[in-house]
Image (cartoon, rainbow, N blue to C red; front, side, top):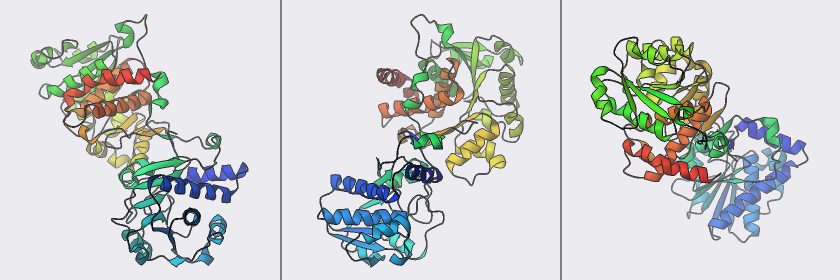
Length: 487
């Protein structure tokens, strides 16, 4: 269930299910029953307030209230709006509710009941205001179970439209939406349960979703495990451009590329920095660049098939020239940090040369400098990264707690396994190195980026609090061993 469905795609899934013979009221009954099961598994019967909105989310609430009442729970139901305004399946659900319908108002939350938030679903498109906002704000500090999403949360972006409650539990249906996994939505949803409500799996064929949670099921079958009859040259020769001053970045990346499986890794560096790099990891080759044409000559060897430029490289004309030389050599490229910022004023010059074998790994600041003028920065994270990948022609990895990876063809994943401990200097260099190592072994850009982001997160989880970037590459063998054991 890695797929993420947009709000429009979820509406389509409902329509396809109904067209396949699943009645709408049956879907609503199943949704309500799923919420009740989840609630009863976690709490003993106690006073509960079910807050219903004017649409189908409110219809789910009527089903939930009725089933809880039948199970012996003390339930009060409040409706935002009037019963006469309900239509379709929601009106049918309201007819089946045997109890009184109170007007939605904060008073119903007195006594600190369990709150079932069935006011607004993922399709809300404007900020909450008036009474709706007052009622939602009154949920603060209470135990909230959200139906589909916490009211006020945008299902596609994870953004808060005015206000939204903090849910202890969110029950959604068939598939998660991007808003469940993008920040801040992910934190507001609490525990997320995805319930089967009878929508046939085959409806996905008619939707062809392009978004997913980054999970090994998406790329594990393409992971480049070493072959028994293989050798180091078959595993690729990665090149990292090292800078003269910030030498730690290239060293971190080069060791990560080796740990990710590259057969050989060379750091190409200024001659004056050679002693520093040579004193580092003995498994890494160091090649001093004696003149301005040395980097291009080094890349004439076709066995050097993947290049990382950026970590500690320095900003400016020399780094821009190195990027162009790597692209001229038709190598798979990872561009990070200084390589991205060096093109901040000439982004189109870079975009005209990139392709899907290239992976860009910016953080938010670098992303804004490189893409801000061409795509704008007002959209949600998923939309922005998709637009950046389409504009540049490269795979784009926008890093963060909810890292998004997007390909030029529209595919995108949201990563969920990165712990906050990764927010420390140098961890991005390690990530870039992992991507590089996988590209060197022949993975395509999108799958290499998705795999690297997940491995990076798992290494962070394995190390836990107190990790520093130097630790991450050493944690990869354990992560890879566990991944291989999964088959």
